[in-house]
Amino acid sequence: MIGLGLGDVREVALLAAHCDDLAIGMGGTLLTLKQTYPDVRVRALVLGGAGTPREAEERAALAALAGDVDLTILDLPDGRAPAHWDRIKDAMGEFARAGDADLVFAPQRNDAHQDHRLVAELAPTEFRDHLILGYEILKWETDTPQPVLIHPLEPAVAAEKLRVLMSSYASQQSKDWYDEAAFAALMRLRGVQCHHEHAEAFVVEKLVLTLTDRRLTGAS
Image (tube, rainbow, N blue to C red; front, top):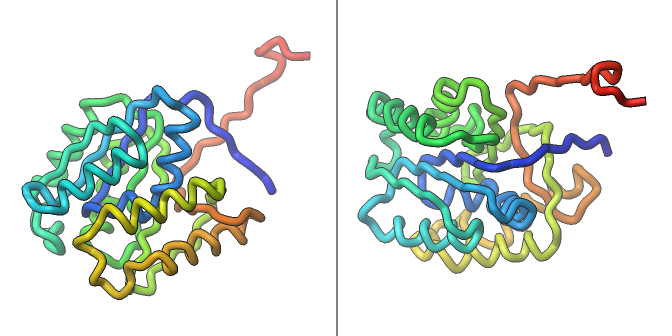
């Protein structure tokens, strides 16, 4: 399997429309990032849920997945993000300028949910020179992407992601698509596609390849 590695990761920026999007789309990757780079700074912007029980759920879940997260949660109504374009654009710009991210995670642009899709569309307008990885959010719409970047997960990491999803978001338990078997199935599918037991996958829209001239580095 052909691989692509990252250098040192000092800061990661996370963008989401709703509380639980990050845990669903990249909970295992967050766990792995924190294990691999213990000192990484994790910053997150979530558009909705402030002042509701969902805020407490999100803070607990992200703490379990990534430790000390610099988390900003706004109070935008679910399903109405396009009507608040100006506020979201301003908030995302302020969020981007407040940090120095080496890596950015956001929803993927072809997500059928209008809130997710707007975050995906605005992300590259504020993080213009960053590597942005688009995570997939399992739900009832048939919008599962065909990702080209797959991140294998250790079995213990996959198990912990499932534990956090099922223990942290009590408000979501009544939804018929929100169950452990569904989340495990998607991780297993992505694992099959990279010869591992479990994995998470991401959509990449633009990636710049730099081939270092060995003559300039002094390598033999």
